[in-house]
Image (cartoon, rainbow, N blue to C red; front, side):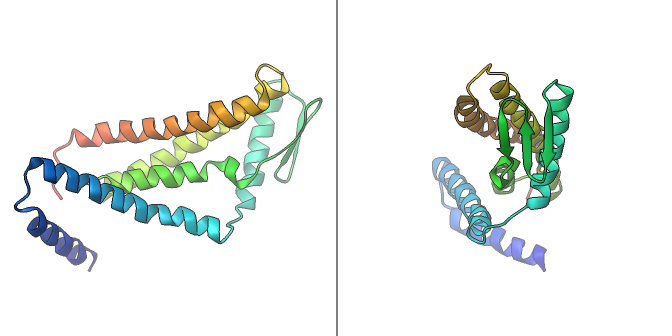
Length: 188
């Protein structure tokens, strides 16, 4: 059934672009990429709209980050989604600290990429999830550690460096995935 639907859209697209020149075909491909990405991003907006609360992951992240910070010499205690740092204060791991929006964005970029087998897209999403989780833990640990040690102002590292840094991290993951799979000769 799914294959029939895909074949229908492939044939429909072939009819649309049969008289396109190369520039029009490139513009068409960009349009389709952006359309799929926009449709996929509606999942992000849906999760925000229903006020999705991943409390389990917030608590798990707080525990992991607290353990790493203790290993690095900070005296921390995690309780629920909170981390108490002696001499610094209490940090709450909110859902936006989990990197879930980055994961949705990366998944949208991968799914929107055309002429890549679904198996390779799913592999890219899974590998991306692991990299985002690791990158996010590094982000949280460095933000809290540098802030608590007064190496860099907490708000500067949190708001400026890591928000932009995470965006570039997602783009780098996608571009690396794209480079690897775009070198393969893959037919739809």
